[in-house]
Length: 128
Image (cartoon, rainbow, N blue to C red; front, side, top):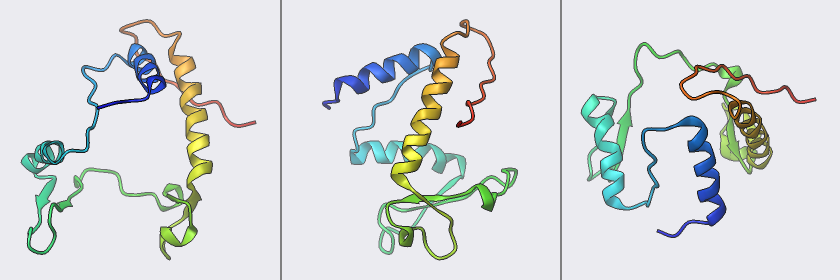
């Protein structure tokens, strides 16, 4: 799989700060799809649906202990408001992507000063 060099640099930078156990690069293959779906299926979170009616589909069940969705903080991000549907709140996907990138860069800059093994609580800087 060929990746853009700047993506590798960014992932390496984030990994140096966050120290993940592993990094998985998605290749989009059918085998990968099956592997990624198998763990939640084994845990009972996913239930495979009928291949005759819904090929390669799963019903995703939430944990009863999960916090309920908070409607005033839940948005559908898409180019067109119509795509969010009549009962959902819409945000422009380009605008939200820019805002999330800015927040992520702010958080990463704060994490850069944290020592290995430390526990850090990072709050994004509010927009001015």
